[in-house]
Length: 117
Ligand code: 5GP
Image 1 (tube, rainbow, N blue to C red):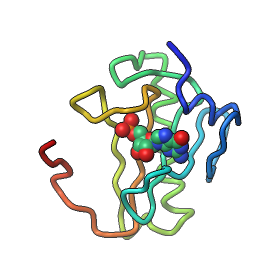
Image 2: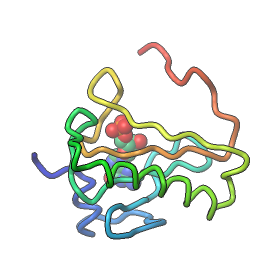
Image 3: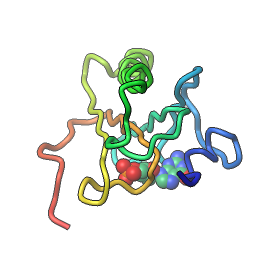
Image 4: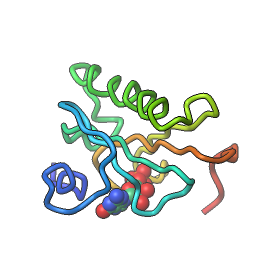
């Protein structure tokens, strides 16, 4: 799988506003935020899409969600609420082929989340 921009962020080859890092994942601010808080939580292991998640990746993928909840508590919006989203492939709106959770918070988010394009 070719390197994506997210591998470059992990390797500090391009800058990002990083809010969390541990052995398995990195969280940083989205460059084009869609809510007052818009973070991306990515595994350090490069997995292209949800379709490429293997059973051996269960720990790391589960860790993305527990990290989202930890960040929500640490940043003080866990009780007000937030949304986590992972897009898959073209129809899901995926642009970067390194799986990532979008963590959106800071306002009442609209539902359903889609619009015709
Ligand atoms: P996707 O559409 O793949 O689910 O989401 C990709 C997200 O990555 C988009 O929300 C986009 O704004 C964000 N993004 C793309 N390039 C960069 C970058 O270089 N830095 C940061 N921080 N975010 C990026």
